Amino acid sequence: MTRLTEERYWSEGYRRRGSIVPVSVDGSLNYCNSRMLGILSVAGLEGKRVLEIGGGGSSWLAFLASRFPASNFVGLDYSKEGCDLLKQYADENGLKNLRYECADFFDCERLSGSFDLVYSLGVVEHFSELSATIAHLRRFLDRDGVMVTVIPNMAGVIGSLTKLFNRGVYDLHVPYDRGDLARGHVDAGMTIISGGYLCSSNFGVLSSCFTEERGVKYSIYKWLTRVSKLLWLVESRVVRLPESKWISPYIYTVAKAG
Image 1 (cartoon, helix red, strand yellow):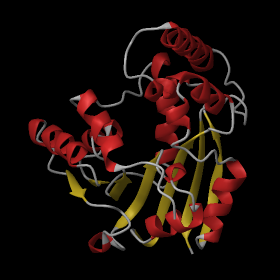
Image 2 (cartoon, rainbow, N blue to C red):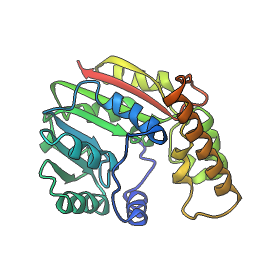
Image 3 (cartoon, rainbow, N blue to C red):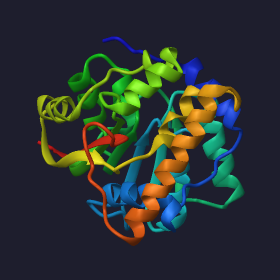
């Protein structure tokens, strides 16, 4: 299996970030986040054992742990910098229901069979063998557990823009499409509950292309993010816009073990 990213890549990103800011799902400017929460909540989040793969420094874990205090949340990440950020946030905010496991998910047997929900937000597309990667994530599910897998839609406009803005970042992804993601779960022995494209637009996912806030490409990126926010305003107040293989920023699959 080919791993397209190394621990150093993620650690450098965590160091640049410096701290965790929880996501917000309120208001029109956070419309896409509210849609993401809906997908993560498909099997319920109250009183659950939840694992985020690649959860070091996770803004989503920070938000969910605060919102669902009766649930237990774990972030699994092989980056020490990411794990340190999560620990710091949990300590500073008194979140006893949030902890981390600093390990590679391929080798972390001690968490097998422990969770009601396992989710990942932009992880599996960094590996060349999709079904084998998903099979490793499946190990962490309890017998009746549910897996939510979200990847950036690198087979659409987001992928084309990533290639234009930063070819090096594009090359760290396998451009799986909706069918690839579904087949990967089926080939890993899972049963699909739902899946498809998520959100009509979110050019903010292109932020990983930039380490500096300057230049023509960055200016184009900033204008595109404003377009997304305008579309979210329309969606939150007027009508929901189509989600498509060309423009949607994410592809997702919800599946059960067996």
